[in-house]
Length: 129
Image (cartoon, rainbow, N blue to C red; front, side):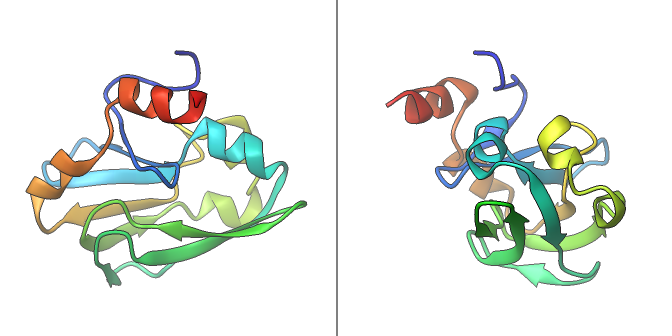
C-alpha cells in the first residue's frame, strides 16, 4: 500500500487526518492519490485560525493546472493553525502530501467522528476499485 501511510485515517473525498502531537489536535491534508489525480498544485486557499467547521463542510479550495477542487473537513473542529508554507510553495502538496504538504491543524470537537473515517486498508480498497 505505497502512498497510504498507516496511522492515518481517510475520507471517501480523499482527505486524511493524522494526530498532530497535541492531544485532540489533528493535521488534515489531501492524499497522495488525490494530488496525483489533480496534477501540479498551483494554489491552496485555506481558512483562518479560529474558523470552525462541521464534519465534511468545505474548508478551502485547491487549484491545480487541470482543475479547482473543494477541500472537505473530515471532522468537526476549530482550525488552530494553517500551513502558511503552502502560500509560497503549494507544490509541497504534490511532493510531500503526508508531511510538509499538510493543510490545516484542527482541534476536534467530537472525537467519535474519527470512528467514521476509513482505515488505510479501507481507503486502499476505495481507490483500487
